[in-house]
Image 1 (tube, one colour):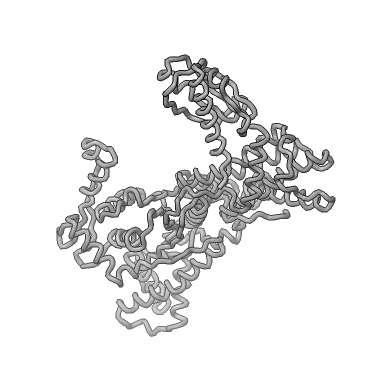
Image 2: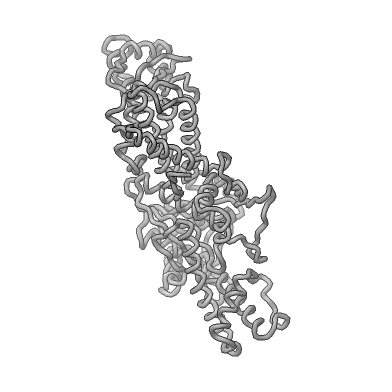
Length: 582
């Protein structure tokens, strides 16, 4: 698909290569020299649209001054069949190229022909990528941290798909292990308190204290009465956990669906235990010599695996020796497998059984220490976890209201639930704000700003630009000026600085998608859309459309409609609506 930025860079390299061959044939430059310079976009437009360093890169091999090389290249350069209007020598020997109207017209043509798929590429080569995100414990409602992870993972998967990857979205349901036992104990305490009185039943010190636990206990009591008062505790706990999960998981799905997130699969941890896959995975590690027994438990040689991993990555023996590397328990002395064992099995399922080329997990920053250990364990299974497992670590959300932080704690039951947040702000605002910064940076979510309808609110600012163009296009169509086809537009009339800057920003969209996919940073799309909306507002303020002579009116109208198309395109990647009226 059309990446007009990449196209222009390739044309710079082609033009210089052709000029070099001609100059060498004419004796102006020494022949047979292979020179590879860089082609960059200067920060200051006064230095041209593209700057090439070929002359400096070839100075040593050619034994000539860079400016002399640059002059010889310019003297033998033909820009006739290129997107460039001119080239000039600058500084120590840079070749600065300026784009011509032909390129600007090609950008508008690419946007028109590709429509909603503008920016799509095949960079991913169809590789199968799983993005696992949110994966919250099903022991309570979705909260603010889940909200950020949700939009980061969802948008990243969208961006990867547009960049040519075959993507899969997955939620890993931790319906087994210690947190489910804690969940059941919390429910049991609340249930027995209903029967025996709060003062007679102590609540677990590390239990879940949220109101949702009380509600589940009341619902269980309404359905079963006191029939579970005297049953064996093991059965009571198992049935309480099953009761709670059967209600919590559908609520999670409902909240995420309201938030605009649909998964390809909800994968349950319990299936790994029930099928024997966790035990099988641990046995494989044992067969490969990566485990040992101690104090009745089975341990993974994590320290040895990490040492091997870090040395392969370039760390020195001395650097590795300074790390506090420790082994991990896979199976406790009581025969139960640890969460780490289940996690290794789950990722083996992803990479080996289901055959994903790459697995991307969006995790909270507090999981930092778990990343390398899991990658190393997968390396030990021969699955190249160091390269095939990528973990995007997400910083916290700071919720603000009236300029003050809103505190939240799951333990105390003061969690800010996702459904409560979406009762206060729109889904569009929530998704836009949570994706506004790279995962590695914390986000300040200002509740007051999120509901404002002015240019200070970034999502409103971008959506308003889209709606403004829709209104403009509809009004001019009624007056007999429909949006023209790209081949009917005279690109040479777009000469104002605000016009050419706007086209250049439109051309950046495919590159932004690719870079966002490459760096696992979907917040680039937010920043791009804000820049595009800003460039449009400046253009609209400086360049009149209605009332201009026909050729200029048509070109500017086409340019505005192209902005509308790309804004809608980018907002769709974010899962944010593009309203036609505001």
